[in-house]
Length: 327
Image 1 (spheres, helix red, strand yellow):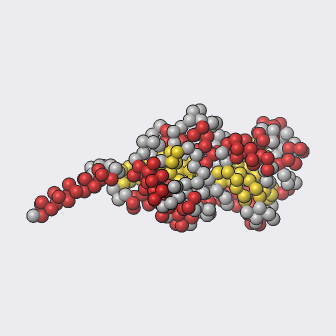
Image 2 (cartoon, rainbow, N blue to C red):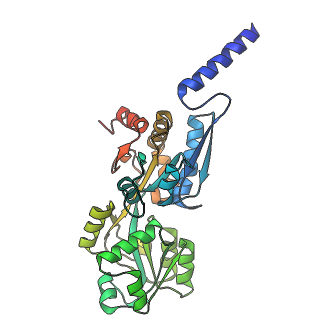
Image 3 (cartoon, rainbow, N blue to C red):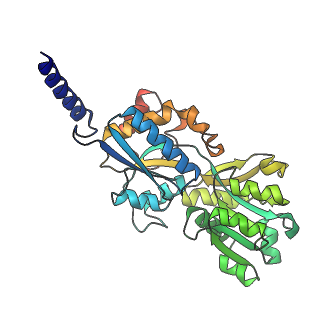
């Protein structure tokens, strides 16, 4: 009797695994998630999502790898990863086949995490600069640090300057300097006196910007309204306001800006079960996700299906319909 029950249990287990769509009984489901750079807020979130997934699907193993907003859609397209994250602007560009992508990439959205990453132009007060327009009019020899060239933060800064009719090369022709570094190195450059401004789109509040504001008097320069509108229309950015009192109270009023939030996505080849489970994880654990990092303070389970360009994966769409986020 014991042997019969054991055989029946094994057959039932195999049947359940096959029906679930997660894999086979002999091989656990391997799920690779690509996030941002190691120790970034996105990487922290990805690691937690992996823990949640393994809890939801016990016979699974998740692997989190470092990636980036521009690189992740390409990694998804070539099958290197199963689930990844990018900015709403880069998701828009990948969907359209716009720069920095050569061709449209068929990506399916899972969730918008509402992790807000505004454009921020932080300058040392001793420059005397109070606006981007002043910098251009004076042809001020500003020494800028920004994120690695070709990364989403640098692309946003370069695009904004184009709205003012200038380039990185123009700044250097004024006697200025532009360095493309990691965020940590950006902070060190300013601390050591090699730079007097840091620009780019990144999470708010960002540790590097906060650190700079802790040891130096700084100004946060707002983009002009027309430029913000153009950035939204041309590139798929979103309106984001940096709140009053940002960075140790340096802003006496809210700063209008633009930026992006994170879109978690997958490919058409990913099963409905996986996409459904990921959407469910975001929805049911949104309050815990908010506590992972200050960048995620705007995470809202009721906005997971908002601002998603292109198509939502059928599995995620099924879940959102069940909870009323999509009709």
